[in-house]
Length: 280
Image (cartoon, rainbow, N blue to C red; front, side, top):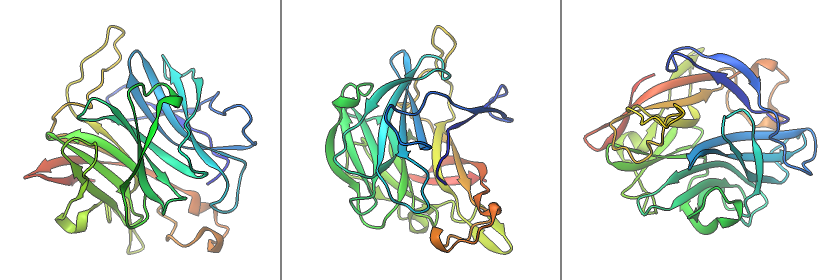
């Protein structure tokens, strides 16, 4: 899908139900070819602001080409966003940002670099609200192409999940600075068949993770950062394409149903050192 905005839904009951709030204004960087394509925001609480790391492409395309970059915005209320600038990652095609604070106290940005084998690469910063502060480190997860990295801490370890288009692959690190080891349980994959359509397994795709733990409120009632919490359970939110069989975009039938997505959730737990989905 190209020419897309960023949608927002709001929950007042802890995520049991959601109300659609429309799309976010003000997320198109200056000079972007219109209509703009906006993908895969990662929103992180840093200091007294929310920082959004957003994938931006210029124009609406019919194939997976064109320049793609990751840019930063800041907000105090999750409604109004200030453009901070683009991140120089030395590549014409970078998407799917994920940002977290690591065990060494520094922040890292993980992302898909389509010019480097569609693998997960990483950059590091001590001032992650400054787009010019990121320094490249290299490839974090090599091998089979994938996208949509997400890094989080659970059960005393750091975990990374990536979308391999056949389920989510699971990796583990002691401090998230590197040394990622693929989980061996069930081939290192989760969400391989959270739903089925006409007897065909539909896999879980690009996901986000929220630790299920007591949060420390700030003075204004906004929940604080729990990225360092050694919790045992987390909410995994992901999407599926129930009417798309996974064929190449240029061979897809012109059927609007192929654009349909389901937003779903599962509960993650660490059991005996293994990350597992306990509910779908």
